[in-house]
Image (cartoon, rainbow, N blue to C red):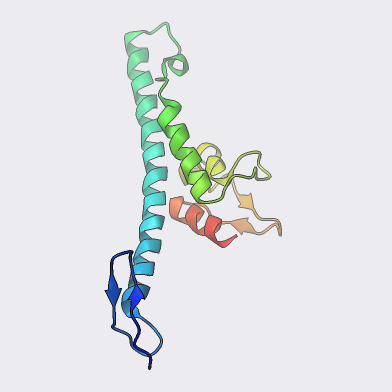
Length: 146
C-alpha cells in the first residue's frame, strides 16, 4: 500500500488511500463528471424552455394583433440561445456536421424537438444502428461515447 498526497483541487490534498485507489479523488472525478452531464441537460432544457416561451409570447401577440402571422411575432432574442448552443457544441466537440446536415445537438433540438419526436425521427450511426436520443441525457451519452 502506498500513501501519497494526491491533489483533488488546486488547494486540496489528502493522505487517505486504500490500496491503489484514492476514494476522495475518485469521488471528486465522479462528481465532476456527473455535474457536467447535469449542466448539459439543464442547458438543453433551458434552450427548449426559451423556445416554448417565445412561441407562447407570439401566440399571445397574435391574439392582440389578429392580422399578423404568429411566426412573424416571435421575439428576436435568439442571441443568448445561439451562444449557449455554440458553447455546448464546443464543450461536447460536436462541431462537425452530421449526415443530417447539422451538429448532433442542433438535430436533437430542432429536428427531433428535444427528443419529443424521437419516436418518429430515428437517427442512425455509420453502421446503420439506431441511436437512442429520447432525452438530453441520451444525447450527452451518445456524444461522449462516439
